[in-house]
Image 1 (cartoon, rainbow, N blue to C red):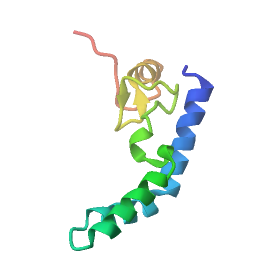
Image 2 (image 1 turned 180 degrees about the vertical axis):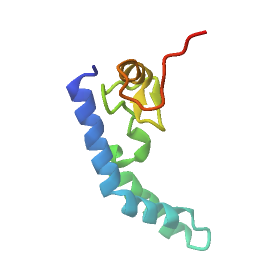
Image 3 (image 1 turned 135 degrees about the vertical axis):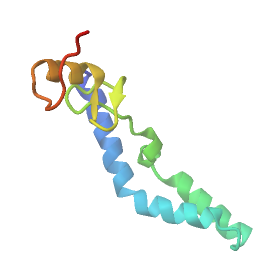
Length: 101
């Protein structure tokens, strides 16, 4: 189980990224638009830099929904390999069986 503080910090990052997503996208579009003047693009970049760092989607860490573990994460299932194995051994994941050969 991951530290509660790490999980909560990641949840705050998710909320901030969602809150500032439209503003960030609008400023990025202005900053990369070659048809605008250099001053307008530079102002957009400065405004983008003023946004909170944690509002960037890059700073959100994929974590297991069950245990909060940051590594060994399966995106499709939104859980770590260890949680997946525990739940499948208990028979809680339909279609998944323990292999034997």
